[in-house]
Image 1 (tube, rainbow, N blue to C red):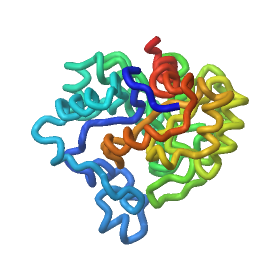
Image 2: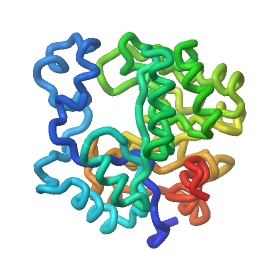
Image 3: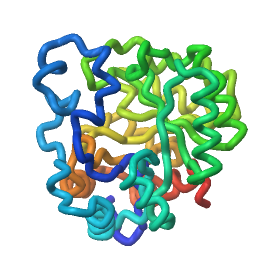
Image 4: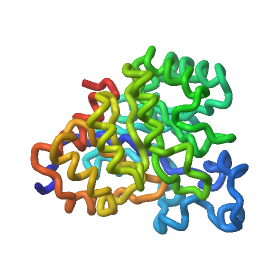
Length: 288
């Protein structure tokens, strides 16, 4: 049950160190009402994550710094954001290591759909990131404003990595209730959805829905491995071996050395590890 080496991990939530953490999350500012979030926090979930990696730790070249970390920890490929100069350079110069993702604002209507098509045609977009609680105004998972985006993802065969459960930033949670996925999975059986950021406190419901819907998956992003929900680990070791996908949280909230150190103690069965660390992500991202 020990974590094996040499698998060639695919990390479904990694990025390059941010030059300015606070400006990276400015899109949340209109929703933040408490004093800590408005004035004190550099990172909107600073109350939860105490060792956020800093851009200054990356030295002069965030791309080479990130590649060195990936090599050290056995990460073969990583899904990263496709915006920004450093990300563009990483994707252009190292297409065998970095896979492009992007977020969209469903309140933008057809402009959001057009941005997906443009990214698909220009950088080979591999996945969409969706943050219902981070939209302004918020857009529930099953809201009609998402439907043109879901339809385009079906057409392009692009998975949606969907934030679910109580959001870390101090914003309302109702738009990310796991139960809302049921309607979307029913209406879009061609759409691949990967739950992100825990699905707590509805992780048992998340398991039930994954049993029900073939194209619904779960990523362990935003959680230190010692805090992975028990229901998810139990599911991965039984009927969900093909449904649970590794996702880190570097540099958003966790250093890679902590993630990899704690993964050593994760109680996964021997036959589950390759699926968790690589195979399931390869399938979802179309890398098979």
